[in-house]
Image 1 (cartoon, rainbow, N blue to C red):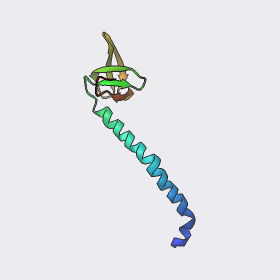
Image 2: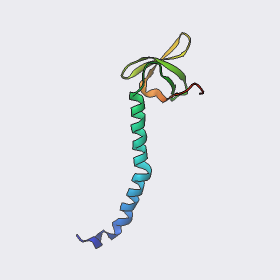
Image 3: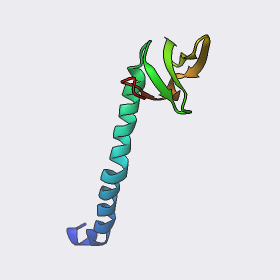
Length: 91
């Protein structure tokens, strides 16, 4: 097989490279950042769930957490339900 027979495949290869750098790689970085955020959760963190519930983590297990959303109201949620950690009190 010589290099001239690869001619018709060059656009296809270039298209795959473009898709990799524009779609696949950023998604992998985002998944890695989310996994690191979920693994670094600790008791007392202020979080927002995917459903938009704000609360403070009271108990934390490998897969389940207890989230205090109001006085005397704790919700048991999956650890994966956390969307983000709130760093300051402005939100």
